Image 1 (cartoon, one colour):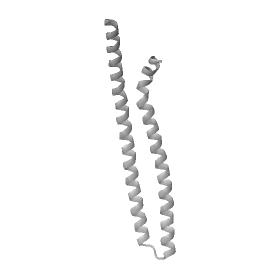
Image 2 (image 1 turned 90 degrees about the vertical axis):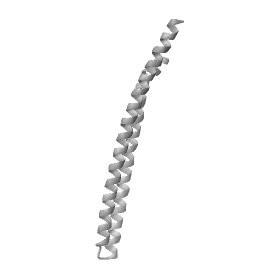
Image 3 (image 1 turned 180 degrees about the vertical axis):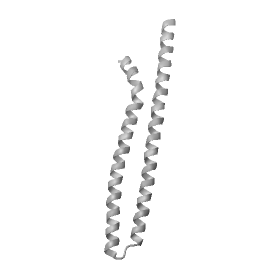
Image 4 (image 1 turned 135 degrees about the vertical axis):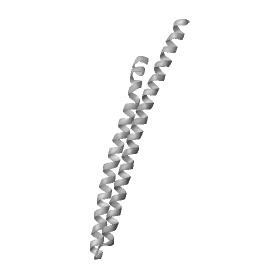
Length: 109
């Protein structure tokens, strides 16, 4: 009976330690994602402001359409690249958060 309690206590402590390591990975990953999203927002705002300035200085309708088309194309490409990057960060976050539990899962099998 004592051995069972000691084993249970040992596994409980190990699981708690693993949970804390996983939580640290989650925090670090979430911070990286938030930083990346903030940087993208800043760049996007700056690009939009620059495009608005160009539109205001356009001398013809054709030039304004060209500026707007270029802005839309660059915005789309930037969004797709950023979405891919953030998706990769989420995938890495999931891997890092699960990594501490791998040893416990292996022992359970």
